[in-house]
Length: 425
Ligand SMILES: *Cc1c(COP(=O)(O)O)cnc(C)c1O
Image (cartoon, rainbow, N blue to C red; front, top):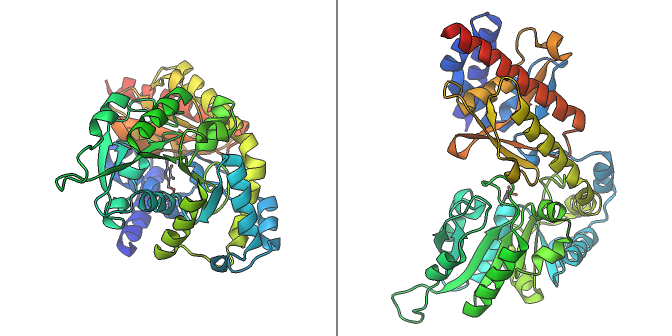
């Protein structure tokens, strides 16, 4: 870690030095794209890449970057607490009760992270070593959680292909279900996991009809359905339904409080009472039994009471930005507006000379003369994403004005790139 951090600091310095030295940005792009990539991914090091204070930074890398505001901080400072491992933290108990009610489930458990929450769900649903779960090949559980279900829970995974809308083909799912148990050749199918909204596929909302059919199939074969609903509140807002209208189709759910809902820490795992009792045990075994966690749960309560209602704002801003990208003159961006359903936007930069990483670097760099053109320096942070796309995520730290500034920045990057391209031909 130490070594990587150093490289990043140096890379950023080199980058800044060359920015000042007046060489053309085009050359920078070729020479320093590695440095730029490091700057984006080392989020903790973004301060080292930061421009002067007058510069407005619009951070669209993820909705995990949200920070607790004054109301949340006050609630945390004043929270009543107790030892939660004894079940005695009133703030945690209230949060869990509140969440269970919103989910329309019997019980809920406060856990440190979404990753732990999903792992606990897998452990509780698949209790015999070698039990099998079926997951989307582009799901967070499968791609971004280090295979924890295999390395820690002894659970075998088989995948179904995630479609562009985050669903999968139910016939393919059916073909993956094992029927041999207790024949010693086969693992036993126990669990299907779905993700809503679907992160890698760009915040796509699973249709209720899909969930209904999936549940029907699961019942037919005696499988459990777990929803990685890190952003299921975004899905509910997009569909204009209560979260319980989505969650009635699954047995258990994991919901992040620390993303668009703005809490600094925490995820809620919801399900039937006996599932949650077992989940308490699994959480402890994984080292997730916290003590006076009411300090954190107090922020979670505000996340559930005050933040769900404002998610639509993020969806609106994401859409506004997407529409502006399509109208950009000169044209440089490609977006399928039908896929922009929530707060995550995936788009393409349609010129092979401008890689996603280099585009992100330019969005994050205050260009010469930009203060004059835009009224201030603007730095927009985004990540290159799978399949050569760029991802931008809206959240409570991003206002309508920020969105407009980001649009101007995207336009200005497109214009400068077009000029450079003309000159180099
Ligand atoms: C963020 C995320 C998680 C994991 O949450 P952490 O709290 O970061 O561990 C799980 N699933 C999805 C879909 C996510 O976006």
